[in-house]
Every structure is written in structure tokens, then in C-alpha cells.
Image (cartoon, rainbow, N blue to C red; front, side, top):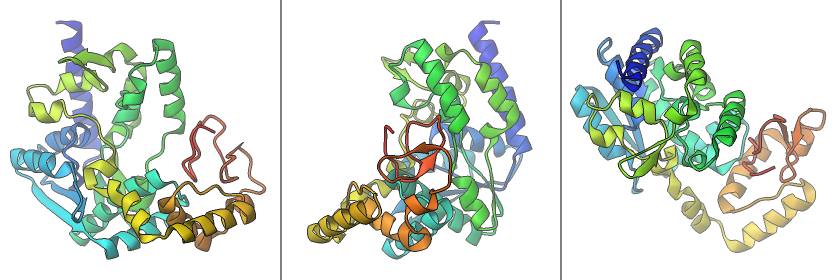
Amino acid sequence: MDPIDHMCSQIRLLIDKVVKKNLANGILFSGGLDTSIIAFVASKYSSLKAFTVAFENAPALDLEYSKTMANLLKMDHNIHFFAEKEMFSAIREVIKTLKVFDPMEVRNSVAIFVGLIAAKENGIKGIMTGDGLDELFAGYSWLFNLSQSELVSRLSSMWQTMHFSSIPLARSLGMEAKAPYLDPEFKSFAFSVDPKLKIRSERGKIWGKWIIRKSFEGLLPDEIVWRLKYPIEYGSGTTVFPKFFGEKISDGYFQEKAKEYLEKDQVSIRDKEQLFYYEIFRSLFGTPIKIFLKAKGKLCPYCKSKGDERSSFCRICGAYPI
């Protein structure tokens, strides 16, 4: 058997195994490659309810793709549109649970939290997610132009520091997030795969997760297998949050508060969206410099929190690089 075909066969068998081990009757479903593979496999063993969320009146890329896959697999597909009231509630709960005011983390996690709420209201207690595949198989475009040695180093560092908000957010709701790709057996296998099989050119483009895509070529629709990777915020429409808060908060208020928090809290506020999140964080937990006063770890010069020495970004405020 051709070595690539053999590897693809191994991957399909292993994913089948870890999905069965982490089976649930619900899935947070974007219609992207990662969740589509899980849904494709899980649908053989369970009557699956899929949950896709989108911010009202915002472009949400996941809708078209998730509908395509849900129809193909004949899943019970729940599309939940959320508006401002639910957004504000979700933002507060996300910040309360994750203890961060990093705008990207909050934007992505709001979509996850809203999806979890929708699933819970439909009687779902355990829910599958596609977490981990991008980290394990180099799905992020910023990895594509690295040398092999740099890629190996970056992936290794990422594997040691990766975290997924779906897990604590689900726990906060009395639910369990099940992530087949984070199964120890699958992770161990992923660590051993040659990085040259993770990033490769095909169809005139460079692709991450190349060997995963090849493994399901012909089994899933081409538009799913070769769908570009986008952050959750683009798929769900929460990418409009910066513009939303930019219009809600006046320039004068932003300038006044940004100056105040820099002087009093030693926190650098980058924009109006982050200001909104920081004020919630501050009301719940206080200032980072006090919270992390006795903590050990890498100091973030922008918010005075402390984190993993191996990380190049701040998990609390999102500053990069630090």
C-alpha cells in the first residue's frame, strides 16, 4: 500500500476509535473540517443533534457549510441566532468563567457559550467539540511559512500550552465537553506524525491538516474537505464585536478610561471592545497586578498578569508578543 494511503487509513481508524470513546448525543457544529469529521463518524453510532450559532444580522460563514453537512448526514440541526441581550449575558459569563479580557478569546468563547446554552436547553448533557485538531496537525496559516525546525519548535510549544474554553464553559453549565482529538491516544499519534504531512501544497494552495484532509477526501464533500480555516468568530459572526463596541462607546469615555486604567491599574487598554471586557473583569476580580501579586510566571508588560513561561502571548489580555 502507498505510504500516504496507509497513513490515511490509520488516521480514519484512529478517529473512529476516539470518537466512539468520546461519543455524545450533541455536537457544537461549525461545518468546518474538524467538526464535520466527528459528525460523520459519530452519526454512525449515535442519533446526533448539531448546534450552530450565529450573531444576528452579522455575516456568519458557518451557516452554509453546517447546513450542507447536516443535510448530508441527516442530523437534527439546530441553528441558534442570538441578539444583543444574549450577547451581553454571554460576555459576562465567559469573562466570569475564563477570567480573561482578551478580545479574541472572548469573541470566540461567546459563540461557544451560546452554543452550549442552546444545547443544554435541548436536553444535551455531553457535547462533542472539534478542539485540538488545528493545534495537533498545524491548521493555522501563520505556521505555513516556517522552516521545518521552526515548525517543530512552534508545534511543540503549542502542544504544551494549548487550552480550550469549551471545557470550563461546559463545566460551568453542568455539562461535559468531549473532545475526541484530545484523547491521549490520538494526541500521541499526532505528535509522531511527520510535520511534512501536516502542511503541504495542494490545488495551488498551502494547506494545514493536509494528511487529515486527504484521509477524508471522497468521504466528505470537497467544499468541506478543502474549506479554509477561519477562527470561530468569523464562522459565528462575532467578528463584528469590535465595530459594535466601537459605535457603542464614545471616544471621550474610551480616552478617559484608558488613561485612568493605565495610571491606576497599570493595564494598557487597546481598544473600546477590550475596555468593555476589562471593566467586567475588573468588577468581578479586581486588577491583574493585585490578582497576580504573589503568582509566579512570565509577566505581561501590558496588564501585569503572570502566565506560562513558555507562552509568547498573554492569556489574560491577549497581548502578543510578550
